[in-house]
Length: 302
Image (cartoon, rainbow, N blue to C red; front, side, top):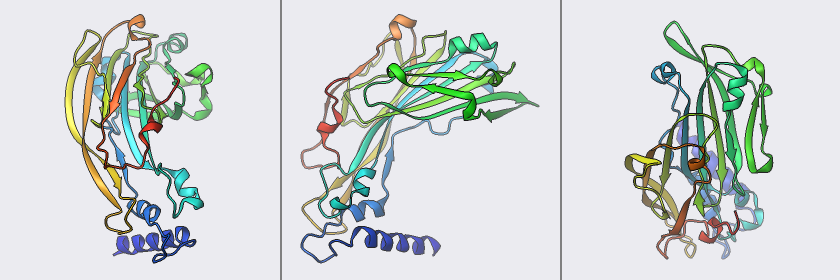
């Protein structure tokens, strides 16, 4: 009952905030924004959510790098905040972005050695950091403990189209492992551009999860990228019926597959530089409107 009651209040407030200029029943009333807000739709192709360092990984005591590329799809907050668009929605009402999630395990040996192994992530045009988290993982009485490092001990630099880290010397403790998690975001889909840390001999994996409407030149198997698994899931877009005003039909779900590829990555620094998986094209039925103009996904210059 509480859930139903709360949803009713949310819908009422949404109507009050976004429906004041033109009311239902008026010729110019358009319920798309109110409908999208009531749906609170968010699709995420990430299949590696909330994965923690386990005891086996800790006891291996080796350098480890995991790169995970996936798609998120949600309402465009610029559209939400634009009162002028309440009843005249633009072509773009949703956001479609690629997330690059990097995770590193670096055993603590010495301050000098750690600093040599910290990642340098190349940032494409329009690619911005979303989250940086550093933790210290230790073993106590047979159980792993993770202690988050304070932001004051982490310096982040994004000049020269690169993201680099500097850690305070107090971060380092012997017999522990540094766990570094970095997420970046880009709205451009021209190519998938994973950035590998070539500063050490890391065991590397690459995971790519993309809806099949995005046709990339992905390796099926190669000396550098050994395909470990190929898993099919689902990814749900929204389809906007802009010409109607029927509350039940103006926004509908559009279901697609989503394929997750997992690779073991081999190679040394020269081979892992400037990796790019180019986009061949986007295949979407002409009658499907996902709320994102496809031309917005292409970046003219990288």
